[in-house]
Length: 378
Length: 164
Image 1 (tube, rainbow over the protein chains, first blue to last red):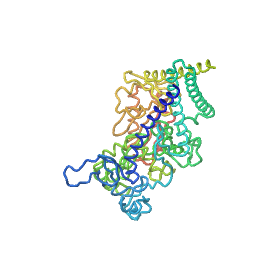
Image 2 (cartoon, one colour):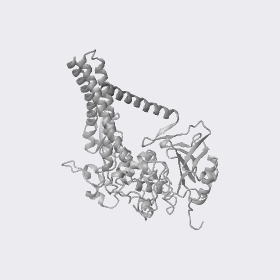
Image 3 (cartoon, rainbow over the protein chains, first blue to last red):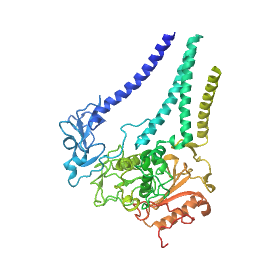
Image 4 (cartoon, chains in turn red, brown):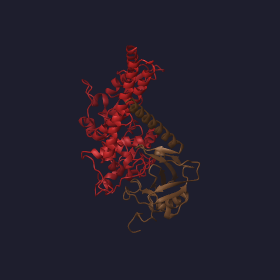
């Protein structure tokens, strides 16, 4: 009976773990080989006309990497180099990647980007961007936030595991059928689970008693544990910079509290920039950045992301939203096929903030924002 | 020994039931959970008025959730919008966000403040108790961006221009 229980428990875990691992592995298999080579997997439309037309979206072409049945691996024909950096003059196959090794290059290493007319947007050389999300805690913007997210994820894992073990212990107790040894073992499992849970909760309680920020959301912790790379307010209301005229916000999506989970210790600066750019209004179009002669706005949302020059989080907008790129010197541009799609993405608070995280290199560099030059001085 | 475990188990079950009960209670009372897990009150659209708690006391306002112009993230609501200004309310911190969108910033502010009092059905004195952020985006006026000007008739309200 004892062995049977062990075998049943082992198989239950084996099946559960196997199913979840296989699921993850299968997903990884379909995306990793293509994505690691700088491509994306798209649904294969086939070739109904028999003309051998490009199955990939505009600006991309089919690549040999596998994505699985009915999917096709597509790579950018121009633009994308290392880690989300962009250079509209670069051709991915010949410029961004060395043919011999398929090793990606940075925009700064590519002649086509150095010459005039190119728009290197971000080389992502600074800051820390996790490759994968921590379940339930997103992608923390700095190291302290990352540690804290892992810690909080651990607390949740302990809680869920303890509940699972109590259930397993209960089941074992149920099927012990009066066998004292089996019942004792079942009790042991329940006891161990509850003891573990109490220990974890006690640890949480002690930390909470010392400083509630230590167990709050990652952003708060990162503020507490920041190693000095960010700037915490000294009460001046402008991220500690006496020259700054950008006060951090306390209401809405651009409140410091909300932005902490994206920018960590740089949340106050981010809040000040957002305040100056949009007043914290989620879907606001720019009053100044407009394509001429049509008058269509090209900058939108909390951080006034210019959709003619930047992607919006995972939405590709460069060359697709408006062309040529709207700059302070060039106002002549025309909306393109994905203008509405990109506008909608930029007017979504979450995506707008995510793009701002990328462009500002986790809140460390705000030189791309006009309001920073004249007002915020971060 | 087994008695202690029974007590621990009992407390554990009680806590679990309590937490689940609290969440059900919060949902039935129109409470939502904030980013940090704290609960906050979201007014029901069926009520004619609702109370806003401020550090200077409670203010009863017309229910702006009744006919919202737009529902926003974090249970926020847009209750004023035209070519000159936008006004949103966020229940999480019971705060109002207002921005001027017209280059004639002073006229737009005057209109906004008048409409704000009218829509909320409150006096200037009551309005001054509320948590308000009134700003001018950089795209509208580069010199005025990045500051909270508040309501012009309140003691903490700031003027747009020195010579006003």
